[in-house]
Length: 626
Image 1: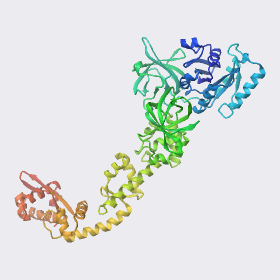
Image 2 (image 1 turned 45 degrees about the vertical axis):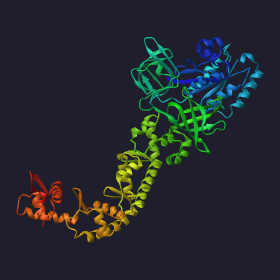
Image 3 (image 1 turned 135 degrees about the vertical axis):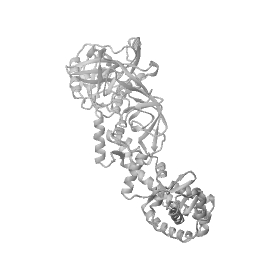
Image 4 (image 1 turned 180 degrees about the vertical axis):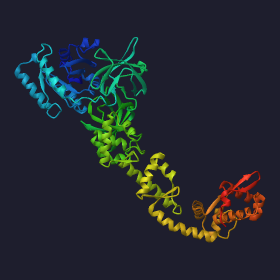
């Protein structure tokens, strides 16, 4: 069975509710005030079988401008729009506004219904139809069928139902394999059952016992029971109207405008980047009302730059649970005039400025299709992502559609696959530029140093260890960077530094070759090599990293001196099996203060091992050649 959602639109008192009653037998005006005033105030719902293969859920919206936010709450999830115009009045203000909103919402399927034909003659009816046709010429209704009916006499109702069947048959089937999502349009409590919510299932499916997340309350709820137009059912799917009995939440936590969706797929943020289509000029910082799904959200719009009011940022006063590609309506805060329509691209960072990556994506962002919306989100991640990460970040796209989008982005070289993980091309390019800039600045500030420590580079880039190692492998393979032990350098600096480094090591050897067993600090180094204090400090660091100076306790000893000491101890063990600190002191003609850390160095590097106060030679010491 195919399920579709039909929504009404049109001016107040043009007979929307009466037409639904004529089609379904259901009076959608359920509120006492609606009965008294004879107009719809809130949303009404009815079920309409269309043949034996299609069942439509019909959403009746109020036409009065005072209840426009209720009209918008019922519009976001419809598949098919029915624009109702009274034959005796023709196009009126809310006719125009409702049509504009349907257009901005991206509704693509619909029909025109001229009601109250019993009140006019044929000539007038022909004029009204022509007026309507002229008005809708540039909208999604330009080639739509036009049905002429009287909800009072029943004239044309059968033909209207046939037309609805034909149109509903052509409406694309909503994807039941996509993640589940439902915007809540009604909330109430039933004694003995608890909280019940109703809404139109936008995507996916649900069954009794399933668990979902309530956004933005961030509560896990369980489906206790399901109803579909008053009938208890075990499961519901995309395109159906449904009532859900929820466990795990109190009625005070639930309100119209909230969403129920798959646990891992909801996006909740007060900051959203948007693509806007304005009906009139706007300015940055303007306070507005966003109507999206079944909710109304207050906030302000901000332009990233003065010349671009198409790609903007929306900062809301309360969290919005939505997904990339969701469309909404923007009205001025006061007076509540229609400003335009928006498409959500992705949750924004906590900044009103474009990053380098955002700037590079402005054109793609402006297209706001599923592929570009997904890429825009991926391009903000500095970390590598797995396929599962990407699926979680894809809003409510089905997994199959996400995988297809990833493959397309890889083929277009907009997404790189590195070691079974993924990174956006613009982001990796930006990170590469940042890495070379960071290291280049370090070379300029400290030209004597061979490079910058890997972990410092990683921290400055703001990426995790896994991502950094994957990126680093690419940079080293392509020659962007060169590794010097634990340091990273630009290739040109590494080549220049190699020559300079060898020259410095040669100078150090000449200056320190006869220094003996002396702790070499920066003061001594400055004296022996005729260096300034700053130059002595950087030279000392280089000699340590190059292995020319060896740390022994709190001292630094010249490497060739340490080689000599090892040979002295080796020779000692050729005649004796043990060595004491006092014996080592005498062998080296030094102090106990110097002999003790040397002995500990020998233990640490497995030349000797300790037995009480004695040292014995290890296999490493015994195997040394003369």
